[in-house]
Length: 377
Image (cartoon, rainbow, N blue to C red; front, side):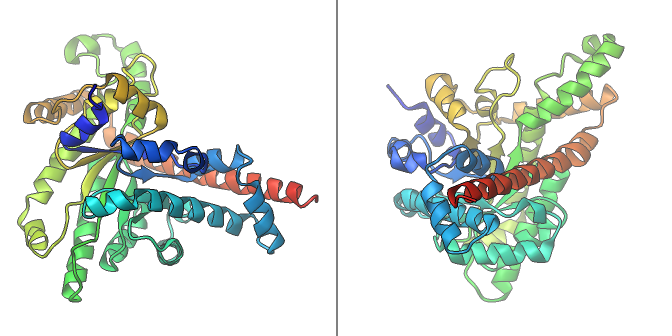
């Protein structure tokens, strides 16, 4: 029986795992997924680490040891996350080397409370690169306005970057510009472009969640909208991502990038994130099945990895016809009186940054409480 995740990779989409916890090193589950080709990289975020660290006792010995060394909750959290990311990087090292640096990356996100602080984010990124000290580390930088110069500077310094929390195509265009400027700055300094990798993480399911709410209200107020434009619920996320993919294709075939590619630069792949289906009425592999095309990554939580391996559909879906249809869907959304830019830029981006900041703050509190308990205070 063929492995559908391996077939997905052959179709141009590299499957990455959107989860990271210490148990997966101890029980061998990550090693198995890597060995059978089911996952080719790994991503993490503050919410993932909150669930991993706060809800497990596997970290208790390290928390106690670090507490006895005098560390408070926040530095303890980073020590734990760095150790896990190092372990994950080591697990993917062979794949990273065999793929010649195209896969096998592990992403670690910057402190989300610094999302609007350029200089502080740059300082932390450089510290994390030095501490993790693994060639297949990717630093996750949010695609906020303050994050764009961070992306540029890190690429210029030769740091692998995962640009995260992308929702709008317009902001994605700015991200591509920041990435290319970083490469151009690096070239101007006489530094090699080969070996500097980047992905741009475009969030998918949350777009449907937000747009469906708006459409529910619009259809309730005017049921004729469905007759005029069709039912757009469950279609906006894929359409938005498909138009982003169209921009990706346009920019990587531009003269600007071709010059950089000739000097050794690799493509900043489009990465589909937030790919678990939030609405149970939608197929559980929707955001994998409908976003298949060359030069992509899809980072999936455990349940989506399992679901796709069982009943995913592998065929090219990011086709010229699908891209054309996606524009029609977005036009219909606007014709229904809806503002996609407001949904992506003003709501989803702000909400995404806030959610990660809250998860980070909750994680600090959970570790502070556990630290005090372990010390008997």
